[in-house]
Every structure is written in structure tokens, then in C-alpha cells.
Image 1 (tube, rainbow, N blue to C red):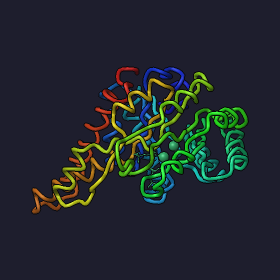
Image 2: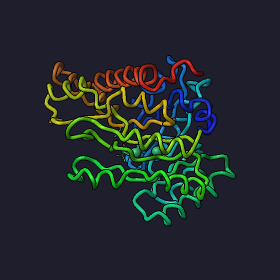
Image 3: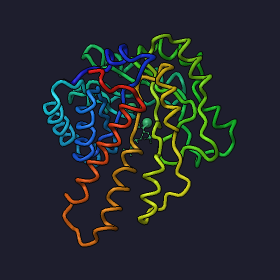
Image 4: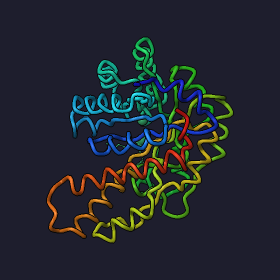
Length: 308
Ligand code: G3H
Ligand code: 13P
Ligand code: NA
Ligand code: ZN
């Protein structure tokens, strides 16, 4: 069934995490759903503004409705990823989402508090959960200086104040991850001391890790082997994600890894079978690879397998 993530987070806190997978089309959704069914795992399906522009909200909602029917005993959250306005959050709440993110992380603190609280005031009476964000995710290409990068990390004092004043149900924090396929220049490094401190100040409160793809070398290498140019791509090592799930991270956002699985697979089919032109012959294997990848995440990285 479609569920609000609150109970899922209560149950997993400190032990395992719920994967939040970005959905942009039918094949990705089907791969993710098949994985959750086989792994007996709860799931967060997230839709970004970009996904909505690409596929139209009505199509994505109908696909998710079908997925919920196809997996009747799997708890499924439909979440708005990176909501950028109060209006957008209200719109998707009215459309049936069970969770929304209002991302005011680029705004001054007071302004972030104000719009986040406004979303909470609309969402909670309607049974919908709200994720806020404090701190900014900075990619390697945006900054060179380490001190500047660290200045964008989440301040633990501010995190407590933010949660108290807004009433959010979960908080996305910045501890060194970033979106996309180029997360680190040198050795991957996350600020676990900061995560520990935030979790200590907000006991039992669900924290969210964005930019949590691992950029699996097997996909990068396969894509490059068949013509891609993804030199220097680097993600968060799986061991670090595993560690974070034991420290209060309850939601782990994954999009880039799905994109890489799809792209590596399609490139391989194109290269090895240039005579093929039936889209099912490459979208099918891509969907199968998404399923394989998500099963691996649920079982070996997030630890949510077998909890349904
Ligand atoms: O946060 C970024 C997610 O990967 C969604 O990306 O806005 O291109 O759909 P998108
Ligand atoms: P990745 O780019 O690491 O997959 O992060 C996705 C994300 O945070 C979506 O909100
Ligand atoms: Na999100
Ligand atoms: Zn994100």
C-alpha cells in the first residue's frame, strides 16, 4: 500500500535505511518494484521536478498506482524530491503524494524555516510527511577549497533549531556527499563526526542522505568501454553508506546509480547488437539491470531486505 514514511523510519532507525529511488519512466519503476517485491523491502519512490517535466505528473502517478497494485503488500512512499516552492508541495499533496521535500537549503536560515513550516502546516493535517534540508550539497566541480566545502555542511545547533521550529518529520543534512557522478576528487570522505553529533542532538530523529549513489565502477567502466566519457566519476563507497544507516540516516537517495546502470546496459546492447532497433531489446535489459542493482542495494547496502 501507499504509506507515510514515518512508521518506516521509526522501525529502521539506527539499524537499516529505506532506499529512495528516483523514478522517471516505466522501466526504472518496474525494475525498482520487482527488486522490492523479491527482497520483501519497503520503498520510497521519488519524483523530482525534472521527472515531472519529463514524463508529466499524471503519467508518473498512474504508473505508481499500477506499481502499488502490482506489489500490494509492499509499503510504498510517493515522495516529492527537492520541492522548490510551497505551491509545488501543495500541488503534489493534493495529487496524492504521501511525503514531500521542501528544499530551502539555498535560502537564508529564517526564510528556509518559514517556507518549510508553511509546507508542514499544509501537509500534516492531510497525513503527509515533510522532509526539510539544512546545509548545502556542494559538488567537486563547484568548489576547490576544502574550507569552503565544509562551511556548507550542516551545523548541529542549527539543525536542532530547524527541526524544533518547523516540525519537519525528517531532515536532509550535508556531510560531504553531492549529487551526480563526480562526488570526490581524491579519497572519498564524509564527516561522520558531524553526523554523530547531529544524531546525538536529535535522538531518534530520521536523517536523510542525498547524493548517496556509489557510482559503481563496473557501470562506469562498461559505459566507457562502449563509448561513454565518464572519466573521474566517483561516488560514496558502499561501506560508508552502510555505516551511515547505523547512525540515524533513515533515507538514502539514489538516482545516479540507476542512470549509470541504464546507460551502461543500453550502450552495451547498442555496441554488441548494432542490427537491433526494437526499443524493448535495450530497455528490457536496462530494466533487468536496474532490478539487479536495487536488489543489491536493499540487501547488501541499506539492509532493508526481509523487513516486510
Ligand atoms: O537531486 C537530483 C536528483 O538526482 C534528481 O535529478 O532533477 O535531474 O530529475 P533531476
Ligand atoms: P545521487 O546523484 O547520488 O544519486 O543523489 C540523488 C539524490 O540525492 C536525489 O535527491
Ligand atoms: Na528528497
Ligand atoms: Zn537530492
